[in-house]
Length: 423
Image 1 (cartoon, rainbow, N blue to C red):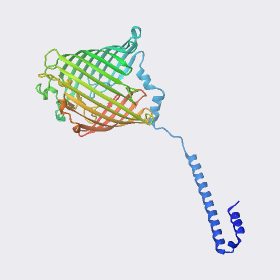
Image 2: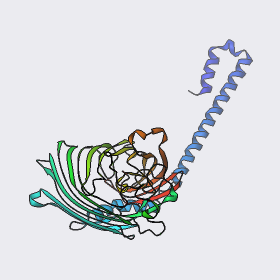
Image 3: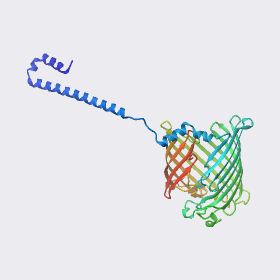
Image 4: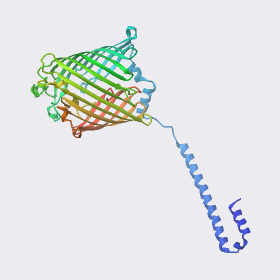
């Protein structure tokens, strides 16, 4: 029944009201208003429907940018996984040497499951355009006693011809920048047990030979031209060490080379014995904690890392300057140069917020804080040096193959290009 019919019935049943002309006029006005509103509503709905249909006709499929297309191509064809998998045990290596070494390349050979599936063998060699070299040889049995024990032997040789040195202490100046050559050879063995699947407890020991020489970076003076042996322990003579340590590790990260959840906790204490001069023996303590907090289906991650290293000696002993912990560079204070600060003790905190921009690329915002100290009692958390910045993480599901970070601090901006995960 239409609105007009309803009103007519109402008037017919109430004739005494119909005699009042005012009511009739009011009712008719109401009828018109209702009709006009209904017509307007129909018109508006029709207009909106037409607009939706026109918009649907104008929609076009989303087109990826050139960068997105390239990254999806790399991921879909698993090019990086194939590159990293190598060929018949040989694996290419990019980077992996200290910042400032220049572009480094090399190769690694891995043979697992030899001697009845018990032993793994690996060897590698790398060199950079600035003369840095690194050679390693290892033999390990990682799954003894049904995975409850492990054993490894390693040899490593490093030749770093132009390492930066600014002096010892938190107040060292950029104007005092020098460089030096550091050569080390290390023979070591590691043994331990896994009482739990992700928990390792073990010991490590070996021999460490060291040598310091004239730096090859002609832009800056060599270390012995600016500093003296009195202020720089180990500058004039370098001992050969025998060392031993004990450690405990708990690692439940989902992918250690590109973690998005879980954590890593480590503590180690050891002793380095100077058997040559009786002047450079020291004790070393290290602790580190990493934790990853994922959300939005692991497309967003908050990453935290804290680490501390303490070195102490008996009276009359010194820690060589080239074995002191350093702060600054691509893995801690990213707004400062590599090896910017060094002393007996160090403390570092890192916080990152990472999110997946698109497949194969994560973006990151980070903040760093840390410093070095002559003794642990000098640590003051409210006076840490800080830096901040942003970065790009080109990755596969299991590893980061290229990292670019831009860090800012009171000493300016630093750019780091690395072929590894930040922690």
